[in-house]
Image (cartoon, rainbow, N blue to C red):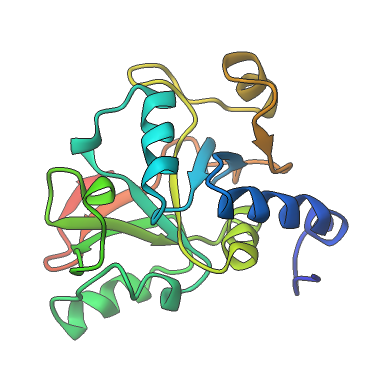
Length: 194
């Protein structure tokens, strides 16, 4: 797989992407660089994978999880846009480091929404994370690589030291952002996290 305008890493690492996508389909958790920090990803429709991810992070299920995708079509299954304006708000920032909260569709599992009737989604511009979603063929859970209350991992070395060294890691660099992506409510544009 060759990705147009991709950095050299993606042009030389299709094997790592293919192996990671295969692991994700089998219910594994994969570590991957994101816009600001290292993150964990898994198949959002695999309850066992999500349960293992929440256990790894020591995160309660009621908080809900963010889904990322390579393009909007990969998110259509999970969201119910409340209006064309709400969808346009999100599309105007994508692909990019902007997460939007939409009403969840009837198909979105409760282990993704948690205690909410909404779901947070992003079409990422990060080349590695986007390529992983494309290779997997759908949206993925994306959450910071850390245990709840701990700082997120900022490097692959951090991930290896703090978690199981056997964990599948997709090589790459973070996007260089200091802070996590902003989170806004799609219906109103209201900022929930700067």
